[in-house]
Length: 341
Image (cartoon, rainbow, N blue to C red; front, side):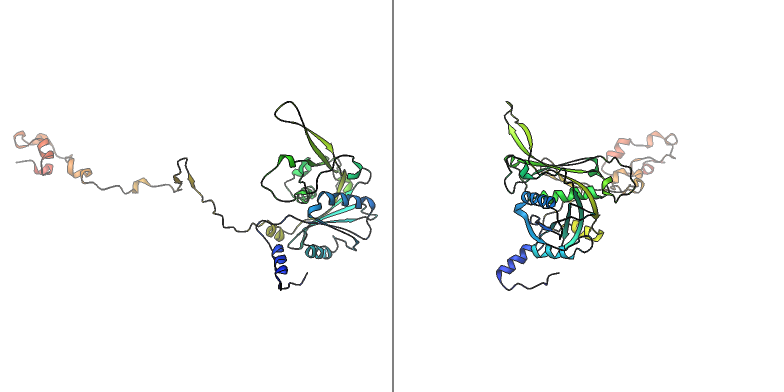
């Protein structure tokens, strides 16, 4: 790890602030370097990948005695020294010929790694395609075809998809210019056909086919143009090798979203079409027998209901006043007070 030094000048302070964590991070930069033994096919493949990502990429030409899966300290040092979060390491050996190792770092620590074994028989570089080349810094469309990329459990193919998206993403943008959609990258995976029980054998895994196509729009006599594609290069076929998944704690820290000053959406509160605020309250089941209602004197039973035990037949009619006079009068009297004996 590099020694943390307090900035002494304004230039060094700006450089440290540029590397500091941000809510919206800078575009990821890729670092290309080779091992002590690296075949010419692997170097040509790295050159083509570097040309597609030239604006956010750095390349070393010297040999480096590095073995990523045995000791990744050298790669993390290069990552921190050059402020790169993606590393493409090219090597070739008798056991693993034409090998491209994609590595990702988080906080200048190794996050995950995956090996891509390149097929030299089907490899074609960009220079072998006599077509118009895409401008530097153009963002591509990406297409992933195959059931191998749809696994709900993280594996080599889902990791390869995530790495390739990070590699070709480029600058983040919230707007799209149709004229800027000039080429697309298609990654397809063969369906698994072998029933071998050895998951470490790369020959039993489906082959990844990486193709790059130019997008051409031509007149069609209608409002929408006719779209045609033409192969641009490079043409690469891979078999996936060793995989190192990230630790659970590091993955949780990497996926954590920082707190911002944006107002959070409040639950059960919405606005109608007029602009009034509407709130929803969730209450438990009410016991209506214990519900306290409004007390009114006119609703009392003893005020306007005659006692049921009282019999009007036993009372002489001449001694009883009219009911309407008793109720509507200025002073209400009880029914038992209106009977004269």
